[in-house]
Amino acid sequence: VVLVDQALRPTCLAGEILVRSPYVALRYWRRPELTAERFVTYRGARAYRTGDLGQRLPDGRLVYLGRADRLVKVRGYRVELGEVEARLAAVPTVARAAVVARRGATGDQEIIGYAVPARNAAIDPVAVRAALAATLPEFMLPRFVVPVDTLPIGLTGKLDAGALPPPPDVSTVDVIGTDPVERAIGVAWGEALGLPRVDRHTSFVALGGHSLAMALVQRRLEAALGRRIPLAVMFEFPTVAGLAAHLRAGPADTAGSPDAAGPPDAAGPAGASPTARAVDRMRRRREARR
Image (cartoon, rainbow, N blue to C red; front, side):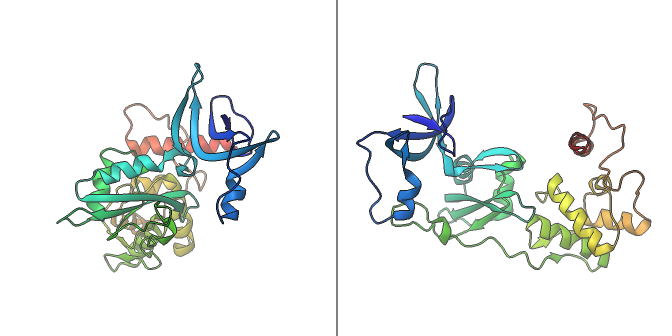
């Protein structure tokens, strides 16, 4: 048993569990694509890539870490989809659950949850997501929770992820209110966050927003309004109504760099608000990339 990386190079502590032996099976029955992926030659011997992740302890034992295809990166964080799935299935109104990952509007991986309602219960996606937020960090929260009557199962008895319905269509964003500036902001939020409906008084973070999504909103608003709004301003006025009122009151503060996410001397003191700390982190990341 060997631990290897994606390029089949041996790793010391953790990696995919590979079994090599002259007694390994030759192939999958009538599955040439899967055979080519899983059955390989490793250092001259026949071997099988299990698709499982393991960690080797000092005494030689292996600890199972989960499936390799269920470990994804979300905004730089490693997320085990099985853990999110277990938390989703533990919500009282949910009988069964499945979680998958896909590329979102920002280009990042985003998590989609599918929930089968418990008997005599109904799935409220907003309430379910709020329940998950009590036990999961923000980067592990599903972007959508999609109610389904049943989970599609393939011939092997495993989830058929390709047969799951797509998440809600966000090609048209419904913004409560008729003000044109509010509508432009709301449409940018909805497209960046994958939301079909945006309330004018709900904060960007409460809708599931984060710094990368806000940067996408910034670009969309620049195209829609013809002006570049500093990220610090958008975090300072985190609702559609609040940001629109600020923009109507006068030109956006463009002092310094147009991409400025906070004042140059922001040091992120321990007593600063979460928004101030987020702005400071973004500033320091930009400076580190220069």
